[in-house]
Length: 247
Image 1 (tube, rainbow, N blue to C red):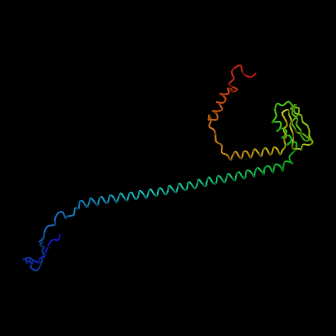
Image 2: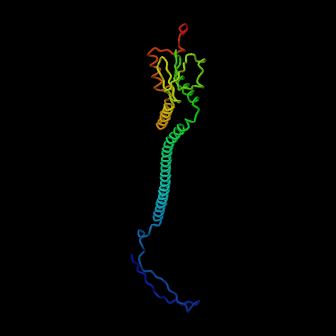
Image 3: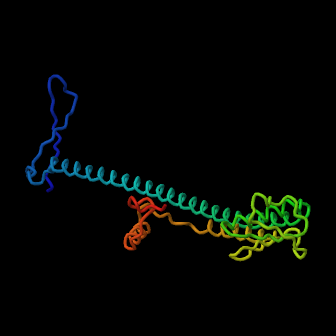
C-alpha cells in the first residue's frame, strides 16, 4: 500500500544558528497493516530446513560416490583375479601338454638307446636276467626246462635248483629263452620285455592324465565288501575258532 508522504520545507531560525536550514519530515499517511509485515522467524525456519536438506543431499551424494568408487575397485579386483586364474589354468594346461609330449619323446629316445646299446652288452648277463625273470613267474612246479641259445655261462646253478633243466636250442637267438613246465611254456626275449615295459609306461601316463577320486575309509565300497563277506559266511584267517586251524 502506497503511503502519502509529503516533504515540507520549514525555515527555522534560532538564536544559536540563524544561518542554517533544516529539513523535517512530516508524514501524512496511514500505518502499514501488521499482516503485511514479513515473518522473519518463519523465514529463518525455512532457511534452516533448506540447509538441512542441502546437507543431507550432499552427504548422500558423497555416500553414493564412495560406494561407486568401492564398487569399481571391487569389480576391478574381481576382474584381475579372474584373469589371473585363467592365466594360471592356461599355463598349467600348456605345461601338462608339454610334459606329456616330452614324456613320449623321452620314452621313445630311451628305447631307441637301449636297442642301440643292447648288442654291446654281455650276452651272458642278458640271458641270465631273462632266465631269472622267467623263473620268477614259476614256483612250485615239478619240473622246469629252460631252452636257451648255445653258450649259457653265468646261468642259474642247476645244483641249487635241481628241478631246473637247461637245454640249448640253436634256433633261439642270444637274447631269447623259453621256459617250460607242467603248466605251460613262457617265451622271453628282449623285444617282448621292452614292449611290456613300454606298455606299462603308457598305462602309467594315461592314469596320470585321469584324476582319481579317493575313496574315504569305511565308505560305500568297503561297506559293501564287508557285508558281502558277512552274507557269504566267509571268515578271515584270524577269525577261526580254536581247534579248526590248519595243521
